Length: 228
Image 1: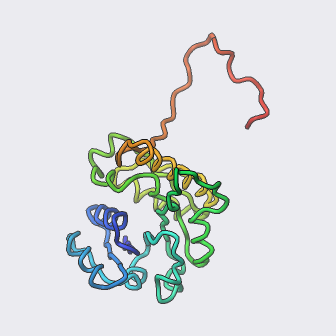
Image 2 (image 1 turned 90 degrees about the horizontal axis):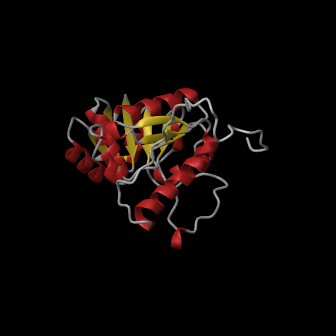
């Protein structure tokens, strides 16, 4: 698969290198061709580098790591994104004291409005860059969840596959509206990493537990409730 990295900072560089290791064709884009080429030279593995416009034209799947920046300000034309999967791994700026406002519209939903002909997928915003150093091994044994949301089921599955290849356990989170919840998880994990000083290896894993084998129902079982 051809993957274009729009914005080759820590997140873009790390994911691009990991996907290149899995045999994907990767093009690192940056504000200048020189910076993109420098990242590609560092990455090796026959990766390419250049401008963000070149990365956008190259990729079938694009990682858009320019947080909160309208693609119209990053690319010469957003028409190049038409029909392509655009992964949004971004979180909002951390406010003073981690006093976040309620998320009424996610960054991913805003991005989808800005590039209506693209297929936006929310993913990779709930782990720090440090975690990628463990991918794919020994990361797999830790079963770290990668939450994925998009209105397009095929695009969602494509990104889930990309997450699984590099050692994550993908979690299908349904429609893009649910990116509001995923971005809230991103805010929480950054609170744990920075606010609670757990470090960059604090992660979230979803585990499905077996039903109790006890027949006594000593706790009374689930009673009818107005809560769904």
